[in-house]
Length: 577
Ligand code: DGT
Ligand code: CA
Ligand code: CA
Ligand code: ZN
Image (cartoon, rainbow, N blue to C red):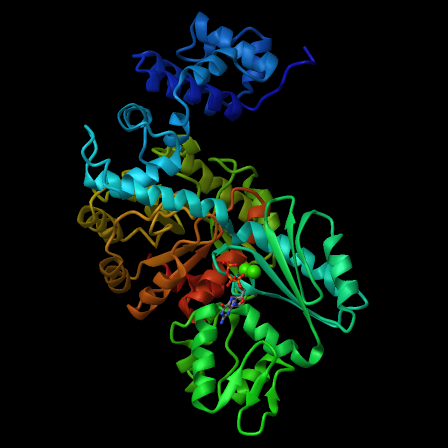
């Protein structure tokens, strides 16, 4: 028995889902549904499926008959499934790869393979670009467009990484380099320094008079798997995680100009260089040169470069050529919200729904971050996959939170809340009575993403008209590197939010960062105010708040625009009651 492969439930489920997909591709009827049903049951099972196998209790899972039971046992005992292997071999090459694209199910994949001989994503792209797909049965021009968009998305996902997963690594490398004796200054540069939501590669700049020593230390850092290019001024490596890191080493004298240059963005740099040229100056990675006499008038420190161009220093998050240079010239840059300005987290999950920790444990972690409050916003009932709370359970939770608050009495407050679902018609899945008892109500779209733009817009606005709703959660629904936002007229949503006093969430979870930065700025101009939430599912996730702040900064927001930069009593004024 110790030999059991001990796969987690979701891994067992993944194997069964794949069996279902392959059977469907083969055109087998009914069986795919049966496998999928069991896979789903296992995915949401409160117990370990391995325990059920050991205790001979697989029959308790709905839909499990003799055949599937034997297969689950095989998966648990061996870690794989022979039946799946043979199904994989039967299929035409590349068909399964196609089904991994958004919008291509098994049926479509098989038609593409059979009718056009498509053997993979590259083939598919060629065919779609040539307009050969629209005439296939069940396809059309729209499908063809969607296929191309899906391919672009999957390519990009291969090349870019989420800021939330990259930043800790980047900071660790920065810290290790800064501890070297041969390094006098070091900074992150590139998109990581600008805190862009996704990162192509990590750029780091160091100042040193002994660049070889720095490069030696760099290529032998833990986690480096391969050296791509090695030189005295620039070295590039690939980490075991597949992420590329570029290190440049310059002399102190040029450090400021180099930092400015390698921070980018490219568009910002181009605009800045144009401004320099207009003043008979030349800006490059070495410094700012006066073309009249050839003297270097700035270069040692970054602020000095901007100052010499008659600009205030521009925070890296704004350097995207979206008007920041003009604002720096007229001294009208926004007073950006600070990374330490957040006084509480307004979107936290617990073990009551799909979180990993109890209410007390989340509160304890929040205290450690010096927060003054958190809002517990577990899912409501209709979100079954997240084990959402029924009205009765939510009422229990409210009482439990009251009890914990009374017992602690240390100035930290746990707010009761929910993340309820906005239905197709804009109604939410909790009665007004209980919503009115909550401190914070977040309402989010979790289903029906394909609704036409007009209906989706009306749906969200209808939800906002319920005056128990304080916040719209992750308002565009996008998932970075994998799912496009749903179709929605944000201008109309913002206008309604501003007039109704509903806050727009900036969901700080690394794969969301939703509202996106550019939309934050539009919303602010429409008079909207914001709420930052980590959407934490564990104590550790509370730290994601930093990425929400980064998004707010990239969206030109000030502390004033954000509800949870306020003390608890001021926060109440931002919430509708
Ligand atoms: P990424 O890596 O795709 O997330 O984006 P960045 O901005 O980090 O771009 P990267 O790594 O190619 O280059 C780092 C910085 O170096 C970039 O932000 C600006 C500067 N840079 C790179 N290539 C050029 C260029 O051709 N022209 C100008 N003006 N600046 C450049
Ligand atoms: Ca980069
Ligand atoms: Ca780079
Ligand atoms: Zn949500």
